[in-house]
Length: 584
Image (cartoon, rainbow, N blue to C red; front, side, top):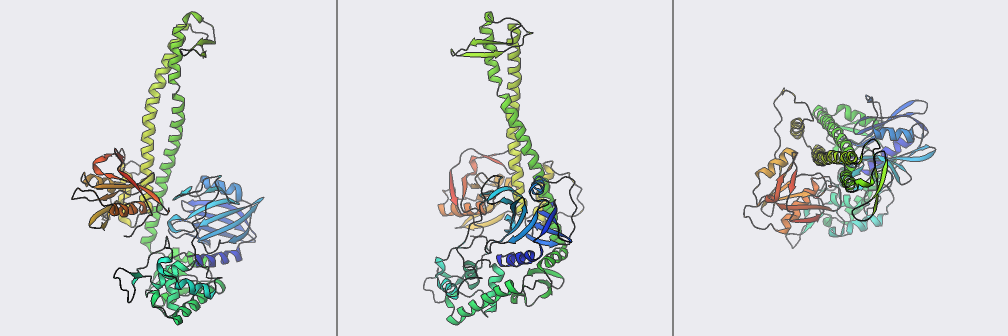
């Protein structure tokens, strides 16, 4: 399912017609990625906000088990929105964003960013963040009190308001002058007909439409080309004036259909569900189309009819994510407690100094005193608290005993804090691996890692385990490059690497280990390092950032960390700033 901006506009129009005036009766957080709002306007309605495998906002007939204890984010939403009136539904431009405007004393915006794996739910008061389902995505932060940062805007035409001249002029722009479209599924470029330089390539028609038109995803770009009786893969340089005019007509026709006459279709191949579209698509002529009255109904049926293996995978992925995040929250709380205790334990040096001062000024101290002012060793005056029931020597001994106790506590707490920080880093890496898991084999490997670490009970194997995939493999300028899929595989890559092989990892974020094989034991060309660093950035939490710092060094400068997938770098050889890129 491709949730493009034009489909979101149809969904917003559907909800806008049915929701305003509804009262928010209750809010639940039944699953890690799911928020539900119980609404009342003469009848009960359930509004589902989903940020998991199919991000969407819809009315639903599904029922969810309510957890006995609401999450912190759920409590925040209840505080500001419960008993509020839903006064509007909007979409900024053709962004993949849907806003619920709720008035409860003041007006609040419950914003859902439908950005694939980067989907999020944010509560806003004007432009101030009150809270979010996920507090950070890439380089964007959504912590309470911060000013909301919208996703980077792109210089595209709004197909609802553009003129014919604007559209045709953009089509005529040389491909090299068109900015690349991030987050879109790339379409293969087509070699320009008649190009003199063998290396020159022209942009395919569907890809050009992706880069020109706002709110258009890969499938609608192909659909426009097909409606204009054109091949989506043909180069734009080969278009005639008549074909360009046909593209204009096809684009306006498609947009008008979505905006004015939506007719949701559930597309199936035999009994296997393939996709949902807001209108019938020429792209799916060979598939069976089952019409639905609303997109919400189509979404419900999509999830009900989804292949069992897809549902099982998504369920297990969510289950493991919930477990890992639960352990992560536990470790964060432990770090906060230990840090606080550590601050108190730092008093040990003061106690030692006070004990020494008391011994140096015994003649000035008498039993029964609750405090005394003494000249410190640096000439300043210092007030020292005393136990009136003890004599001067006993007071000094008490200071030294507490000094020794706090010093031992400080040493233990310092070690414990480092252990907790390593555990948190490990859990964040596992969470990253879960986000990028592609199949049951990936989940099985992560499950085994968590079981070995004591985060899951070891279960007896009832069936043959799925064969785990090996590391991702790339070849850059003749150099083999490996990218790990899990913490255990990251460990294995480093263990098997030669001393002169190069290791890369994104800085200060969870991510995969990347190894460049270096059989010649010579310095790796900078271009190879650059492209390998782009892979390291892509397979990390920084995937959606514009620029990401990536560290590199030779394997001989690594030492095994305390947790799976962690290493200590004894000597960093360099850092490069790169744009994440998953294909070379």
